Image (cartoon, rainbow, N blue to C red; front, side, top):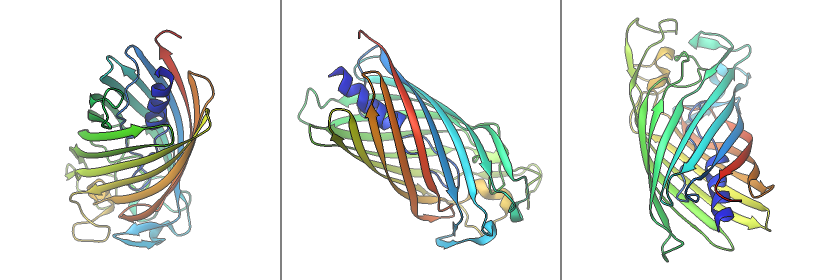
Length: 309
C-alpha cells in the first residue's frame, strides 16, 4: 500500500495545476493522502501560462494586450514529508519569468520580469483515514505564504506581493476503478505597498489584497498499472476588490483587483518506477473577472525518498 499512497501524494501535490488570476500562479492544491511516516517526495514542475485576451470585469476582450501574448513561465520546486501517518509538511517555492512583448501598454514597466515567486509552507493533518474507515479520507491543511521580491503594479508583474495565510478542508477517496478529491479553502493576505513607478501611483500608498475562497476538484482514473488520467476543476473567488476600469482603479492598484477565475483541465501521470513519477497537465480559464484568459501547460518530475525499499 505504501507505493499506492506515495503515488497519490505525487499526483495531487507534484502535478497539481497552477491556477491563477492574471498570469500569476497560485499554490498547488492540498491532498488528504499522507505517505508512510519518514517518507516523502521532491517535486519539480515547469508551467507555462499564456493569453491574448483577458476579462475586463466579466467581459472577455483583447484590450491593452493589442494582439500580444501575456505569458509567464514558472519553475516550481516542492518537498513533501510525512512525520506520522496523519501529519505531513509541504514546502514549495518557484522562480518565474513574465513576458509581454511590444505591448507594455498603459501600466508602464518593462516587457519582461523575472525573480522568486511566492513561497508556501503548510502542515496537513488527516483526521479520517479511508484505509481504516469506510468513510473517505478527510484532512485539514494550514499554511503560510511569503511574498517573493518582485515589483507589483504592472500587467505582467509576477504576483501581488503580499504575505498571508491559507487553510482548507480536503476530502478524498481512491478505489480500484477511480478516485476523487475535493478541497475548499480560504486565503487571507496582507496589503502591499504601491510601486511608485507604476502608472497612477501615489508614493507611500498601500493597496489591500483581497481575501480569496478557493475550490479544487479532481477525478483520477487508473489506466493500467502505470498510467493515471486526471480531470480537474479549479475556482478562485476574491471576496472584495476593485474592477479594471471601475471606481478607484489605476494600473498601480492591480494587487487590489477582484480576481475570480474558473479553470478546467486534465493531466496524465506515469509512475516510471516505485520512486519516480512523470506528469503532464493542461488547463484553460473558461470564465473569470479581471483576469487573463490563460491557457496553462506544464510537465513535472517527482522523486520519492525515505523508508525501506
